Length: 422
Image (cartoon, rainbow, N blue to C red; front, side, top):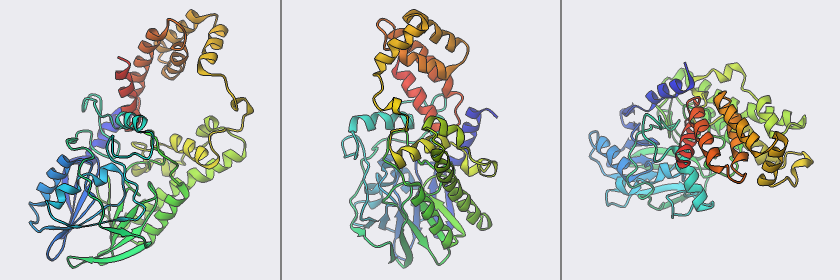
């Protein structure tokens, strides 16, 4: 199966459905980038995560209201990513539910709501990663961890501030007669918590597990996600011995016999990246060399829940290197490199002039050597009079590479930039 066909098949993971995990636990999959879960109590309901838009939240609430008409008494945020906190006002229905979150909640909302990063850069790259503005099916297939087709009306606009900030590593609460443990679980984010219902051993894992290789680095831009901490959290989750797992993305795990092995393999994949990266770094390998050195063993790479639909091994390797020792690769040549335009001019001279370098770029595209065509196009674009020609080649190479991707975010990013080039 071609990579793009494999990515299309992965969309079945996000077919719209409300799963009844238990008689009183229901999770909505495929209505938004992330899942939202309802737990029905004696005199009210509890909502875990609220999706990324008010429209998606409204659609899910309508489905939940087919099951229960009880008021929403509590909302729990597993972490502060926009796709988990932006529909709370809809679920509150004008009431005043308790809203639980960890005390270090890092809120990431829409364009003017305070990214802890350069705003313009982050908004631009986030749109590219998630294919916002791309045509569904023909361009944007899915998000890797969510459906390609989901409502974005009210994106990032329904956040409500928590009323109950959790300082403890574990807080046991009873809401509407439902006993839950809210457990600190840093992983994809430092502010993460998971929800544990010990009575029937159901774990609501947030984004510490979903059906894809974990997104140890997000190409939209993010600070280092501590790999060891994420793996340690998976140890904590395994120790709970859940018989059902409801993740923040993708379908719930309902087969008790396989859950511990799934979580263990997920953890082992992360630990393998750490160990193999450290080995290669001690051998003096640079990041560019390290990505070829670090490959998951077959017994992990073959797992259906470790396919690279969202995160990738290569991006993880680069993130581990920079997160551990910083940007410098150890080669003194790279301490004070030439500027891009200085390098482009010298490469052109080596090729026999600007026109010859542009010809080599055209030939690379014709020969379907798409990555080399991209790299040459970036250099040619810096030469006087060649920018338009380089744009045409780069756009064609990006679109061709997009069709070779099993990773949804890479595909979305390639196509988005290609369209920006005209």
